[in-house]
Length: 140
Picture (cartoon, helix red, strand yellow):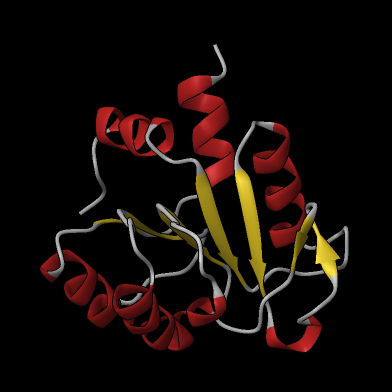
């Protein structure tokens, strides 16, 4: 079930740091555009992509895995195929202090990941874009 607009807005307002799973170096890719938007909106965006670990994107060093992040993260923004979401949610739940929100981008849904995240008390958003929702709810 999709959280209410009020809950989405609160999640975005309470977030300072976002781990962007599946970050792309290619400016034409949605993950790149969304990461740029979120950075310009004032969020710290930590890119996660094992193929580009050690490079820099959004002013941050790209990490290979969520477990490589040492800082507190409130939201993970997921840009991987639906069938690949669960391992990232498991890793995030085990390693990320302060995690409050698991956000799956447009066309991404995973019931097992949702159930796991909700069992940990996390807010889960499926099939929604963080940038679109931020513009719609907070850029007035």
